[in-house]
Every structure is written in structure tokens, then in C-alpha cells.
Length: 319
Ligand code: DON
Image (tube, rainbow, N blue to C red; front, side, top):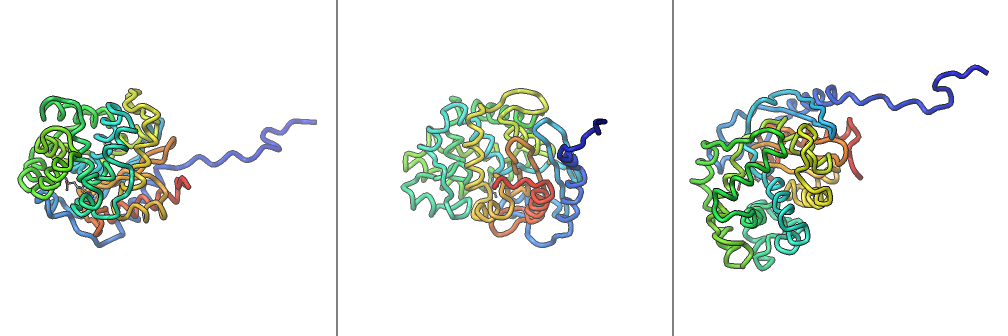
């Protein structure tokens, strides 16, 4: 009998059209109104609120973008993931869990009450207190040495030279009184290494680098690819640390809305008050979105819509 090619075999799954999904997610996001730029950091209040971009980078390095993806925006809290990864490389995941924690705080990202409730232990490296404590653990005798390592690590994850915005940094350094109080509380509780003002300075700088959606998606893709940057081929993070980093993101990455994000999207993610969000589908791809207006929890309103749309259209929910 003649063999018919493909007969009796299951039909091959149609290849995903990630580009089309990215464009559809952008359209869905742009249709959304509401939210407000963060204004407690003066620089952020003045970023044009209509900007909106979406990028996807796959674990093998394919890039798809739509919208305002060339705009460099302040990374803000998303930098907490990179510094966490750096410190985990240095002291290991168990030491991070012991010293900082791996639980959601259930309170806003800059909460002092959360610290007071747990004897000064931050619970998560992805809230301000935990991130300042994490920054204090970056190796280096001086702020400059710590800073060089943090910037190099952000750059390795992005596969390109990431730069500090002097303007964002000035805006943050001259208004970060609340974080200064957190740094001293951590110090008084013995939850911070060295000089609290050095940790605060370094943390504030790490929040003040500029990234595009593509940079951010490549940073996420390094996590999606088990710690190897798919563009440069460099191993940036030990493979065994990646699940711990993603777990921290799942628990606290979108602050008090982390549970809601897990419920609706089902991906580890991390937001920043600059309007960026990074989400990771392990082994598959990473998404980065940017649009400045935020909801009450501090998450980009349009970014949440774009990511939910992509999680649905590309079937990404890990649960
Ligand atoms: O420390 C701060 O408050 C800012 N540099 C970063 C906070 C942030 O991005 C929280 N995000 N939702």
C-alpha cells in the first residue's frame, strides 16, 4: 500500500505567531484608560502617559516588539530581580531566604509596618526594605564597587550596556526620605550589612537605570532560558537559582496584586513604578511591557492588560 505522508500522525501544532500576538496585546493595552503616573519621584510624573510598548523575547532569542519599544524608561523596582539574582550567585538561595525571606508581605511596597510586624525582617527581596537589604549584601568595599557590580549584572542580563540616568537618579536621591527611614530601621534590626546609607545609595541608583522594552524582555528571557542570556550565550545565573528567583517574583513581584496576577495570568512577574512590567514563562519566553499610568498597587494598568492578553493568546499560564 502506498504510504501517505503524515497519514495516521497527529496534525502538527500550528506554529505560534508571536508577532501577531504582540501587536494584538498592544492594541488591547492602548484601548485602556485609567491609572496615574507615579508622582512621588518627580521625574516619573513627567513621562508622557500615552507611551505604550510590548516586547517578547523567546528562550532562543527571537525578538518581537510593538509600540513605543525604543523609549528608555526608569527600571525602578524591576531592578530588584537583577540584584537578587546577583546576591544569590554570591551567597546562595538559602542564605537569601534566611536573611531576607521568600514570603509576600501583604502590604504596599514601601511599607514600614511590614517591617515592624516581623522584627525587622523584610520577608521579600522584592519590596523596598528587602531590596535595600539585598543591595547591602552585594560584594564591594565601597558604594562604587557595589554599584559597578550591579550595573554589570543588569547589562549581562540585558545583553547590552545598561546606563544610569543622572536625571532619574538625581530625582530619586533628593526625595528618598521614606526609603532612608527604612534603611535605618533595617540597620537597627540588624537586617542590613554595613553602612545603611551606602545600601540606600546603591539601591537608589539601581532603580535609576534606563531600559527599553526589548532590554527588559531580554533580561526576562535570561531567566526564561535557565540563566543563560539567549543573545550572548553567556551564563549569567546558575540554573539552580532560577526557580528560587521566579518563586520570589510569583509571591511578591506585583506587590499586593501578586495573588491576583497569579490568578489571572499565572506567570512570575515584576513591576516598577516607572511603568514597566517583566513576566517570565519558564523555558519558553519573557514579556516586557511599558506604559506609565499605574493602579493603586503600583502596577502599570496597560501593562497588566497586555500581559494578560499574551498569556491567553500564547497559552502561557504555568498552572
Ligand atoms: O524605591 C522606590 O520607591 C522606587 N525607586 C522604586 C519603587 C517601585 O518601583 C515599586 N514598584 N511598583
